[in-house]
Image (cartoon, rainbow over all chains, first blue to last red; front, side, top):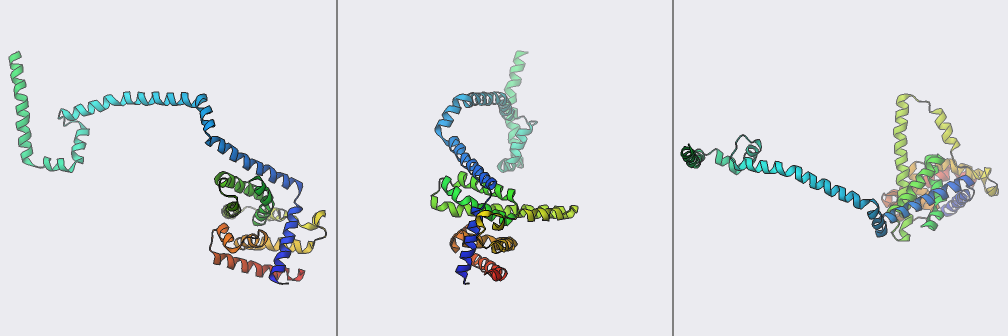
Length: 141
Length: 172
């Protein structure tokens, strides 16, 4: 028997074995096929515009509104902290760790810090800024 | 898609059963393959479904074998009794036509031996042989489905054919 005849014989026998599958197995296969095809329908429903339109009004819109409110609340809570941080830096408060970190992270600023002329300039500037305040307080007294 | 799946599910089930030796596992594997085909490739042209389906099926079968080998290793560490499992596997082998009235005219002995020999083939040889001979896929299609080279397909097929012919020669 040559290769083709041998293969043909095997094919015929295998086909017969499919024809003789028991009823329960056939039913199981049919059920599972339906399940697979239904999964496609669920997926295509999920992708359709109508599904989103309907579900939007049902529960997605209130959920989105809630999420939006939560976002606003987070902004309200966070913003004062950000302003404090900005004020801390602007007022040359060296005790503010954020300001120190910012200076340390900036290589250019580090060069300035290591320059002795910078401290001389800073002292002069600070004294110049303080001087009018002293005069004001002296006048007030 | 409905027609395609109905036409292919019997052969897919038998292939999975030859590979796993377990009816329920074979049914689950076929269902997984059908679901993935429908969900991921349902929109693809119909002529692509067959190689895609068999590619998914073969991957699922390989995954099952990997899980089984891990499970078997665990069992051997824990010294679980494997005799019962072996008996179950034998019971789960596909029914032979000898037990079915529809195929009494067929060569029952040949079919019985074929079942045994197909189940005994190494997995890749078994898959290649069934795809080529039963499903009628050419070498290129089989290579796509098996995710291997065409030369591997040729090698697996030649070895499978040689073994089957050696074992089934006396039934010719």
